[in-house]
Length: 451
Image 1 (cartoon, one colour):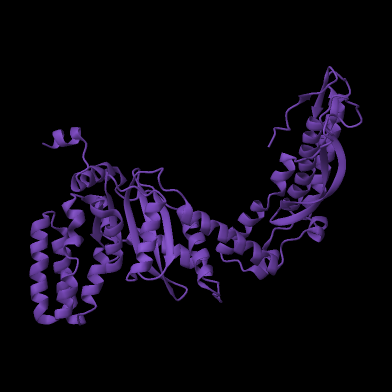
Image 2 (image 1 turned 135 degrees about the horizontal axis):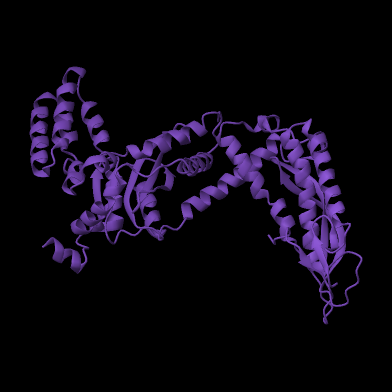
């Protein structure tokens, strides 16, 4: 928007344009009195509206200030009203009905019109006012509605939950009916979903990608969460389906690659254990994908095969093996445990052996301390998933898969505003070096130093 609050020189020497005053002579001795009168009038308006609430008073003042900003832009483009300017390129062309967003509503106003002077070929056109376009932007209303509904407000209660804006504004406002709110919410979340799933990923060095399946609105979804080199967590994508569905898993992972996820220096993928998901990662990123199996999922899968009486000692041995910083010794301990489980429950033994080595990937990378707690499972995604579910808790009727995806994406984006950097982020440079070593992408200098 053009800065309309500053004074501007007009065609008349010594005159300046002031919002709300038009062209004024700054040397006029009566100017201070005029300004004082204007301020006094604004205060009286504010005081009269305060009886209906602070927002009502603010909206009343806001509408007047908006009108002054728009008029200041009109004067800048077309010159002071009533002063003939033969060299003008733009002229006033009356006004028409318009609407602006204030207090979560659409409020009717009169919009001034400008047109360009007819050129040599007889052409002229409408001139847009940047100040008006800013106030009239429906994005402001859409953002308000999305935030309200993600916070748990239903569409039918949207109008009642709005702050009072004054009887006159309230009577003429629109865009607050249940159907209007619903349409705008669907449109806004659909745009967010499209932007979310198409957002380029080639502007960051990604070190970790967590991928996990979760239940949402009686359906299974797969979400992806990335971690940048400085430890920032960023939602990367969401699809509907299971991590055991090869087509769905491949679609999610290949989509991340196509959007610019660069694994040329290695990325640690922490996965929930779905075989199709692990295969998709390897197929898409090859040897540059370093796969770690979520230990929490592995422990649950093993213990689910066992009676309660057997779970305590098995859990203790699992934790002891994973706590061993020597990966070879840890793997030997886990294989020994699988042998013991063979006598108790062969299915539990088979579950432990499946992907056993991948539960020790983070150990082989030399990750310890706080960062180990971060990458040994897909738990960093849990808080995001819970926020997604919490935002949708009041939805009673799910119409289609697109609706689930829209809510999931909107919830993930909202959750990202609450994220902190991952625990152990100061150790990420060590992880980056370990990934380059594991994938064979070290620079010559790094190789010489390690030698």
